[in-house]
Image (tube, rainbow, N blue to C red; front, side):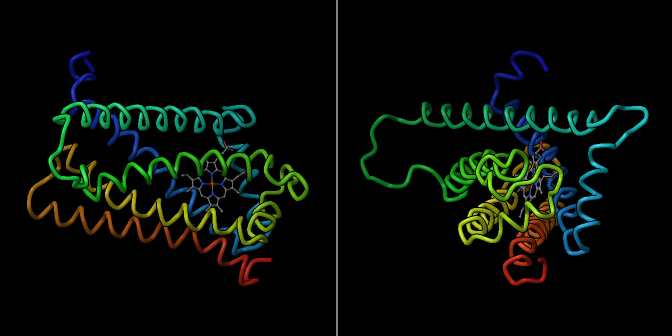
Length: 223
Ligand code: HEM
């Protein structure tokens, strides 16, 4: 990408669309992987172990996982930086004073900004919770993700954090997927309708699929 392209709003929106789609692909796989919890601890822990041995013997232990982590961190940073720069640009482009105190931005824009901030905070919480165990040191056992998930969702606040974040995620994907399709220029009237349907379906499936895990633990289906 040339410098001019990178500096342009279209360039930044393209970065947002591509990084967003990379994260979306990860989320679909992560949600499906999480549902293995309904098949019991052996299945779930075995799957977590497989994630670490993926690509062996060509790759070494955890290499594939580290590649995924690096790609995801790059996608999150690119997404957040472009979002911040586009917001700043949007604010600067406005006349300084408004006669009426009307909301300055559209409902979708505000939802995307707040949703993005909530999801950023959630990712930090989620890693401290289920990867490092920092926020629940008593119940956390490294290498036993099934038990750790049960431990997380055995408190009401543990479940509330995830359920609220998953609702924010659904709204974010619903609008984000649609925006990405527009930015990447796949729009025509009939296609627009199809992309809206896909955006709604993806948002619904991901939200329900992710929330099924805390609900499963809270109702005792997973124990
Ligand atoms: C109810 C919802 C979710 C549950 C139960 C869940 C569960 C888990 C578990 C158990 C792990 C650790 C896996 C392991 O150590 O083998 C993990 C890792 C991860 N999750 Fe989630 N997850 C959920 C939602 C999400 C969402 C919405 C995102 C992104 C926005 C996300 C991003 C990640 C990432 C990036 C990691 C990898 C951290 C690492 O580098 O080890 N998760 N998740």
